Image (cartoon, rainbow, N blue to C red; front, side, top):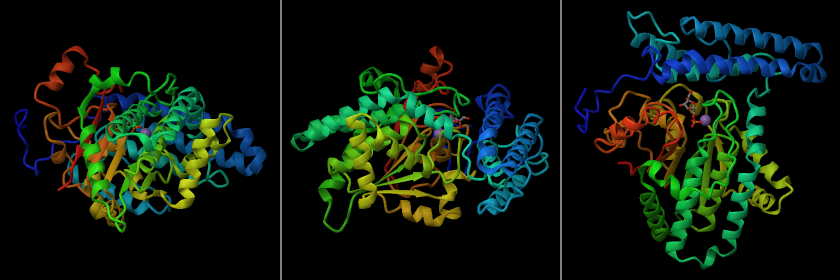
Length: 449
Ligand SMILES: O=P(O)(O)OC[C@H]1O[C@](O)(CO)[C@@H](O)[C@@H]1O
Ligand SMILES: [Mn+2]
């Protein structure tokens, strides 16, 4: 290991986080949280048995039984640290997954091959969600059932108060946005950016599916939260967007991409930020990237994306419904675009995107700014490795630089780069859980090449 503050040569990547490090967060996640998530998934299927029967008759119940036994087997494999097995379904990404397993086998040469506790945490955790997907997808007629849907909807409804507060604030802001001077516009931008950052506290895989909705008004305590933003590049984002706007010609549009994380309150906070970027003319187009299969319990799929906008539209609250109507309009006009790409639900970290998904990499290169939401995206940006905390973010990205990018992430797993010398040690001394409590956040920017 290099001394703190010394940049490692790019070739010397630190080891990935893994359940083999007993007592680490990865270890406890694999030992406790992942089995809990599987148990909840099985319970959810049980609870929907009658619904499956009503919809599909005996065939639905049979499919539910098969899915449950597949999931119970999976839980047993995990808890007894069995080898990771190839996928046996014929879904479009199966070959890539199986190639990745071969790659992991080669890496662990002589060390017994990939298994739940011995392999990289990122790999086995993603693999679990892919197998949950297979449990359903392989079992028609319940193949389109999203086992996490209920939890995502519940998070949305339980965050209703916070959503109303945010939509109301935003619609009031829109009334006089044209009259704001640059400084006021900047203030509003910084506020909504922080709401989107702290919106990331609300994910469900972290709490193993238990309630994690946004209860209080998201705008009230922003100032008190500033000391908890460990890397604060917010001003850099503002400069980038302002410069892009000033340099803009009719032909070249300013495009911002948001690589989404969780549905529920977080998604609404991302929508508000996206609307602000267009309404303030800082951007002309916002592209959203969601997941093509249910993922990490609360991540946004196309269904969640459309459902959320419909719910807002239909809400019995003037400003909520105004937001929903405007946002559907943005999609129709093509100034908001939803994408999903298989790559986001593969086990690869983003340093291999250019090779594994060159089409996606090329698309991201068209953007002026990529906003990566959440903890899992941060893990994939930095390769989920045991980095020294002072290693520069640019280095941890390991050549992933499609466009200027920024991570908006609350810390929920034990990896963090780009801190000042001594910063990590200082927090660690008083708060040993600082990397996993979700109490701290980063707005961490990399200007690309
Ligand atoms: O929704 P997010 O912010 O990506 O968080 C996902 C959570 O799942 C985890 O992968 C834990 O299993 C953590 O990294 C994080 O707590
Ligand atoms: Mn998530």
